[in-house]
Length: 377
Image (cartoon, rainbow, N blue to C red):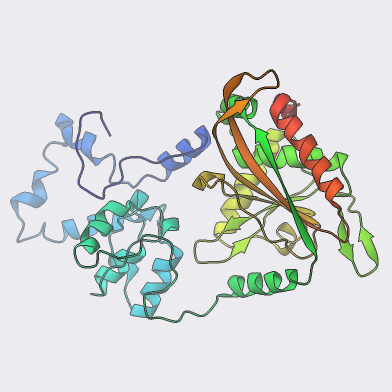
């Protein structure tokens, strides 16, 4: 959108991406109606726009009806959020006739609710719409309307979906594991600077952290081990599983196999593909069930610290919080401001002891603090 221009409340004016590849992908998926404005401004196209306006009651009347449909179609395929598709099925709403209000004309749950005549609920965080348009409408009627994620309306009882039920079973099984937790503060100034250099080449922070964890795990095989019925199992590979929240509920942990031996740029490409197929539920079982260590990152939400629950079949999981400016006292008594993040390790005490976890975190912190550029070698 040009500088100084205006837009209606609720209209998408920009998208935040991590890499240049994502910018190209968004441009490729832009709705076909987007380039209409410059075409109408060009002299040869001037006669075309007035046609539907000059005869609104006759032949041109159906023309405006087709525009909303085009806004939610990409390459002949409707762009619909999973929740919106489910609601449309339940309410008997024809998606082909809706105009999506989400990014690139994506049909959201509130679009379906409007079409069905049902009061619109605030959009879910995962759907990517501008909350201003919907929240502004609902605040006047209900000042206490929720703004967070929800899988059901107030008063409803919603059954767990298959993935949520599987996560529940795993979490219940984890209660039988004798876990301990140990935290560490890591200075990230050099990591942040290095990330700015490689971000334009397609590297994501998730891949960078996974690579750092994997390289450190290779030096600490005890932390990569797990408890089995026969004893302690030491995997031949370092496979880092990374927790991903699903839009319709539940978690899945796509696995970056041999992350310690995989090139950082290739690791980022693999991660992008895994996330894309996770969202569309196209992962094969071996792509989310073969992790030897799990990474859970909530830093993008700005959290200070958190503990993660240990998944069954692994020995440890690392919870990564946000990096933020912190006043730090130096060994010589000087004061400086450095960026730091808190990481917390949850480990199975049957196979990993406190000293093992502490040594692993110390080496991970040293790698991130002093030589993160080595991760690209």
